[in-house]
Image (cartoon, rainbow, N blue to C red; front, side, top):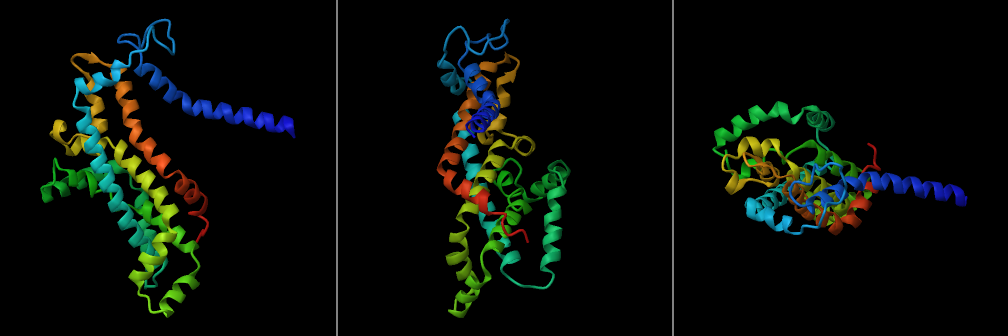
Length: 273
């Protein structure tokens, strides 16, 4: 038993190291002096530790502006996704109406449509609304997807129906049942959806690249990272430093929602219906 436990711990440590090595490499490269990123022979550590790279990121481009824009877009998008997904998931899971399952299957089938196919019609729609080069164009088009609805629907399905029936017998309406009973119970699943949604908005590159004309005013973090590649050469040490800085918000979110994240992943798909 001890030998098996030792072997399992060694394998888990090796897998963990394989996953964490890219982050270690990024931090090490961010601390290298300029010009040593592709030095030969290669080494993980440079000739010295250059903490100044992190401050040079903000001197080279207005990176703090891109961070604030990214937080605004990702935060607002997450709130909209949580609200829309929770309401639609409760309609598919807790309410009975004709054609519910057929509509849900059609809604779920939209997950098979890649984003690249929707970019052109979505751009034309934003152009008709006059939303090109605006924050709302980055938030709303992708806020009503089937993934969040499916995730929360599965969780709502796992809640005993007797709980809703008892609330109805006590005179509670559907909105009250949803707000006071279902939402508090769904906090783990909402935490999972919040993390996935925030990271998706935060890392989005293709859609902001198409929609934003004034990058200096409304650019997000992925658009800001591409500015380190240009006529003055590729500033790899600054790219890595900016990438490490951009990890901080998502890392803080994961730490804050860790308890809900683990519990939500463990219970969100138990219904299986």
